[in-house]
Length: 422
Ligand code: SF4
Image (tube, rainbow, N blue to C red; front, side):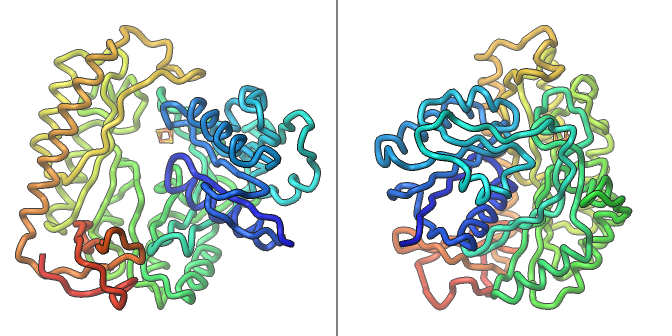
C-alpha cells in the first residue's frame, strides 16, 4: 500500500506554490496525498517567517498531528525552518527540518530518517543557496501561482526574507515559457506570476549561470503564449515597475489591469529608515501613470504601521497620502520586531496599542477605498473568471480588474470566463 502524505502551507503565495511542488514530487515518489486534517504517514508544514506567530503556529500544528497520528513522520520546512532550525528541531514530535536548499529533496531525506530518532536538520548557510527550483500550484485552485523568481538582494531594515531565502535568482524566460505552455495544456486559464522580488527577475544566477534577462522581457514573451488567457503580477516594487511595463500591460489583452505595489510608508523619513529604494513622489508618479493609461485598473498597496520612530505626524502623512491616492485597497501590517534585523534595534519604539490603533484606521480606509473602487464600476460589463470551488451553494469569480463577484453555484460556469454585468 502507498504511503500517505499531508501538506500544509503557512504564509504567502510563493510558499503555496512550493508546497504544491513538494506534493507533486512526493506523489512521483509513490506517496498518496491526503488532506491535512486526515490521518497520514507523513506531515509536511511549509512555514513562513513573516507570520507573526510562526513558532506558536508550528507548535500547535505539530501537537495536533501528534494527537491524531502519533506514529507519523513530521517534516518542517520553509522560511522559518531556515531561520530557526534548532528551535524547530527542539519541538517535541518534529522528525526532520529542511532548510531553503533542501526542501525539494524531501523525498530523498524521508528515506533516510526513522521515527523516534532525534530530529534531523538538513540545512546550509543561506549565503550558499543559489539554485532556482521552478514551482507552481495546480489543481488546488482555478488560478495557478507560478514562481519565477526567488530571494532578494535588497536590505529593507525590517525584513528577514533575504536571510530566509537568500540571494535574488530567477528562472530563465525559456523555462518559464515552457512551464506556462504545459500549464495551459491542463486547461488553466489564469496564471499569477510570483516571486519574492519579482521586478528583479533576470538578475543573479539561475542554476549557476549568469542570467541577463529582465522582467519586462518576460512579460513580453508570456503575452505571446497561446492558451493562457490571463496573467496577474503578484506584487512588484515601485522602483522596478517601469513605465514600459505599465504601458505594455495597458495594451495587453492577457495581462490584467491589476497591480499590487508595496508602499510601506507615505513618509519619506520612514521610507529612508526602512531602507526602501524610492520616495513617496515616485510611488505617486507610478499610480498617476497607471490611472492615466488604465483608469479602470485595480491597485493594491502594502503598508506597515508602527515602524520605530513613526510619530503621529508621520503616520498622518501616510494616512493623508493614501487617502488622496487613487488606489483600490490596502494590505495593512502592524510592525513587529524580528530578530537579526536592523529595525529591531531602532528607537523610539511605538507602543503596541498605538500600532494597533493605526492599523485600524488604515483598515477602515482600505474598506472605503475598495467600496469606492467597486462603485465606480457598477453597471459595467466585465469579463469574470469563475472559480472551481463552491461554498454553501455559491461560487466566486474575479473581473479582469479584480472585483469579486459572488453568484449561486452553476457547475457549467466553473473555470469559465463570462461577460458579467456588475
Ligand atoms: S524588497 Fe525589502 S521587504 Fe521585499 S523581500 Fe526584499 S528586503 Fe524584504
